[in-house]
Image (cartoon, rainbow, N blue to C red; front, side, top):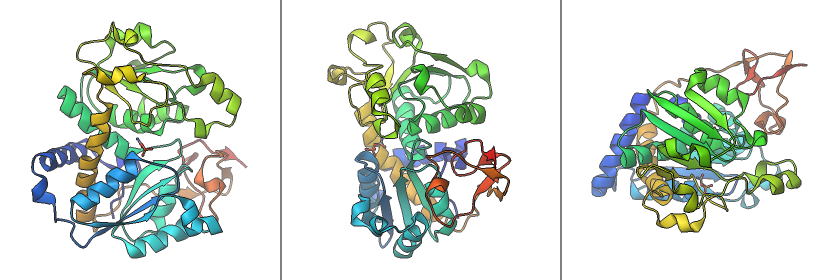
Length: 352
Ligand code: CP
């Protein structure tokens, strides 16, 4: 069965095809309005969401299907101590496909190992957010006409920003992509993301300053500083206003710049920028409905196809020490490694 846990579960050709289907849906919505009649999407949101949950709901309803689920763990038996695995076992008995968000990294892998229906990762902690990346890619294609030969500035919280990690993984596969990674030292891109996706060191630079790099960018992807992932409230307070995009800061930007943001926004884009024709973040969020419609159709059609994911092996001499990994909280799961890497969170494990 195919799942979408990590954006690299799909080839470039599959992503191109999803964008084509979503584009056709935008032009011909009536053609798709009953194609999921009788199908149910389960939405299991263990963490807050506006865009992802509502766009998945809208997507399934726009395909003629139904939706069940929870948007708050306090209204589910998770509040009584039920595991992720047991919650997903039950939801897969009641639905045909599941979109889930969880604060722990690797929780969708736990889900995919017990589910009888396709699992979509709708965001796992500070790790990955592959459906946001599909939303980003269709937006770039529609606004700029291509996914290659672009200089992509990514600014803000590159450490905990899961949308950033998935976007880099996806875009690094296209020709002529240069990344300008703009962050404070404390919020730099994690080593595991660089090692897995940016092996060509000439394809990126890491800088602190947004203003002096603005003029070379084709895309400026702003991100929120992720308060909920910080261990220290003082550290968050110190870093939260590291970057604030204003009209004044855009004076040296290209006229064709695409300003993107996965949203929600806090202070990092001043509202005065919303009127700039280069501000594409609300269109970006709107595209999420159509690309998620295409994704639901693809995964339902490929239920019988074999999974392409490597499964990992137990190794009693290794332990994952990442406190944000699902292995730190979920009872009864196998601790699996690929080499010395935890397969759930992709962090390097250590000898016991
Ligand atoms: N971009 C995004 O994931 O937004 P939500 O947290 O509102 O779903």
